[in-house]
Image (cartoon, rainbow, N blue to C red; front, side, top):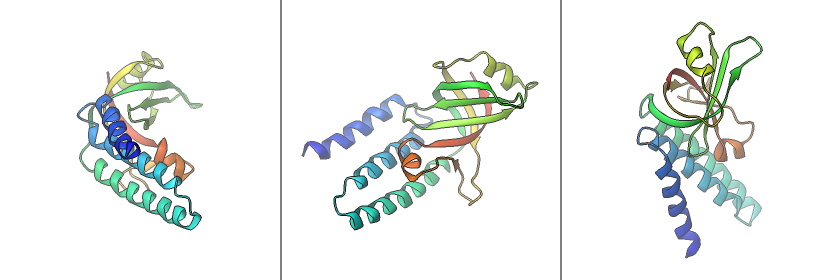
Length: 165
């Protein structure tokens, strides 16, 4: 019984750290993580493979639904990194309370967004606006983890940032 109560409690704690704007997205990420971790604990290898495949498929759909709920507007996060790439373009990584990372790159040096980004440092709390970059597969988000484990437990999404404060 303790195991069945732990999951809802952990999800509630994670969502308590999220702002209202990003809550549907964070709920999807947290649920994906919990279902994937539960699937990894299935003892029978064949059943575990089926459970993992099911968790990933359901997770992709859950994220699609969450992303379609609208643009990124007034979301809250913490700066994980803010620097420039080899071309001198801005690159910022924003960590959400649900342990998802949003990555915005190719921020031009002459852009007001670049000036705002240059004032930020790792650990700064930010509020930001933008949109998810669509995947070539047609999904409304581009998630760049190399493995299904990464996609489900520590996802990284590419976004277009329009404002950060």
